[in-house]
Length: 523
Image (cartoon, rainbow, N blue to C red; front, side, top):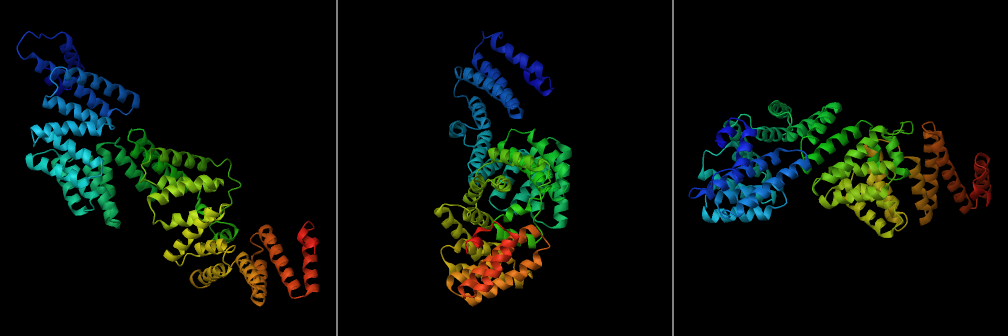
């Protein structure tokens, strides 16, 4: 009777009958224990099913507790019944933190029945969660050989294994077969969509988006579908839809990996709307001048309260709390936010996590090199030097990296610093077709001065003066301060050449405009 009620969708009556059977059913017949245990296990399995669908953590926990209590009661009747063990194993599996217990119970059943399908599928799930994708595939295949008419979910699992094993051709076949068996298999549609999108060709992208749209029509609450659609609309620059879809995904799942993805999608949508491009090259005044030449530096002094940045920071931070160690994009974004706030210590911690997960990521090395270069710690500055050398070796046309490296070498190896500046200026002239900023010319002249190359020093200073005068209209206040530094250095050079009248003239010019310039007063 209870099974028929369940099939008819009369869940309330189904639960009432099972609850009543625990206290009111007759037990005055032989072998009643099996019927009693079957009722208890059925009610427990129902609560496990409800818990698996439940999105509220508290309600989910309560349902799992109810199921655990029932399975414990059934243990006292017939502990080693196969169906009972399977039910308890799936409870442990779905609770998430009891994989070893689930594995032991699946093994017990398989020792008795080597071809038991639920146990094989449970073992496949455990192996997949442990990143043993070949092992998971073997269990799925054995289940399929044992029961060729397995539901679409088995083919879906096989497809995911092939994706992880970097075999997209077989993954596609598995997903397509799953769709043949169940046209409404959302997981298979998403799998095929991702394979299409990863091909990065316009026609494949169109097909991928169509599949995601179909999956959305089938299940508008599926967080996996919602996150993938949010990602698509990010590249379409429809940031309102990104926010809506990602937040919808967040509120429809308790899975932390999916929640991390949702928060990341919202964060980067907020991030891009205020254009934080300059945080990628915040590496000292000289590099900022290069950024200025590329027209990427913006003035945010007029932004009232930084509404967007606050939101981006909030969601990046939340994403890092949910993210697995290998999902480092939220840490990268959060690091950018910290740089924008001037919090270099926390920024460095974020990028260190990225580099730990992706040791060959040269963009991260470059940012860490920039952050460490500004540190007062000699060990951090040594790390900066190591990172920047690797970046220039891997990306020899990266002007900013060469400038960063030159700056940090100034204090320890003037010849190497000069060589790095020389490479940077050559790249500016030949690859980028831009004038060398006056700050860099001034730094090069200072190195020549320290190395005793006085004629070359004078040549660089004269070029720096010309360049600074040409740039003055862009930002009079900024280039005015640069001009003072260059003039002062030129005055010192005149002194070295014993051109005291020229030096005096320059110092007086500086004092006329900047009466508090004490270095000039003392000479």
